Image 1 (cartoon, rainbow, N blue to C red):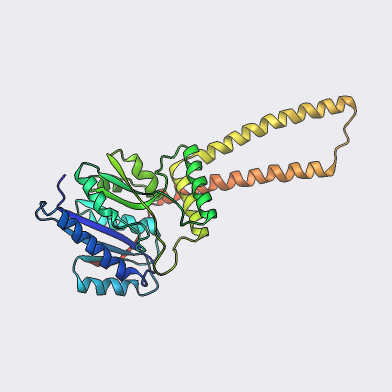
Image 2: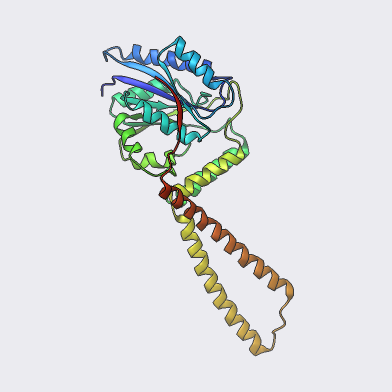
Length: 317
C-alpha cells in the first residue's frame, strides 16, 4: 500500500517541559520513515499538535516550533475538553491531507521508534496498527492490578477492547473517516476502533518513564475515564441492576415464607439490628441503582443536545 503522506498527532495538555524534545524526536523518526521508504516518491510527513486548553507555555512553543519548521502544525482549544476530544480534533484535521495517521502522547512514554514498524505493517495491508505494552514492570502494584481488573471487567461486560493498548496507534485514512462518522458525543475511542472491522496488526513495546513533567492521569481521572468507557460502550450495568432486582424479589419471597413459618412456630421476636441492616442494605442498592440509571439518562441528554465535542480557538496550518 502506497503512502503519500504520514501525519503524527500529539494531544498536549501542559506539556511545555517536554514538548520541544518530543517534537524534534518525532520529526527525526519521520525522516527515518521517508529514508527507509524512499521508493514511495512524493511521501510527505508532518506533525499536528492539539493544545487541550493548556495553562502553561505549550501553545507558545507550538507557535515557535511551527516558525522553525512548517511541518509542525497546531490546533488550540478554547478550553480543556479532554484527551479524547483532542485526539478526535487532531484526526479530523489531519485526515484532510494524510494517508496514514499516528496518534501518540506528548510524553513519548510509548516507544516512538515503533512507528517505523507500524508504517511497514501499513504498507503490507494493515489499516489499523495498535501499539501494545508487552509488560507493566514500570507500573506500581496498584496500577498494574487495577488495570488488569479493568480489562477483565470490560471483557465480562462484553466490551471488545485491546488489552494494554492506550492511544498509540496507526490508522489509515479510510479507518479514520469511518471512525469520525460515528456521531455520538460520549466517545470512547479505544472501544470504538475495534468495532470498525478493518484489518489490524500489533506492535509490542516497553513503556519508559517520563523524562519531565507530571502524568496527566492521576487516580481520580483514571477512574473517571474507566467509568466513561464502561457506560459509553455497554448497558451491562443497567442489566446488572435488573438482575439484582430479580434477586431481591426472590429473597423477599423467601423472607415472607420464613416469617410465616416463624409465626406458626411462635418465634416472632424480631430484633432492631436486623431491621436496620435490612433497611440500610435495600436503601443502598436503590441509591446505587438510581445513580447508574441517572448516568445513562445524562448521557442520553447530552446526545440529544448535540453540542460540539470541542471548540477550536486557533489553527496553525
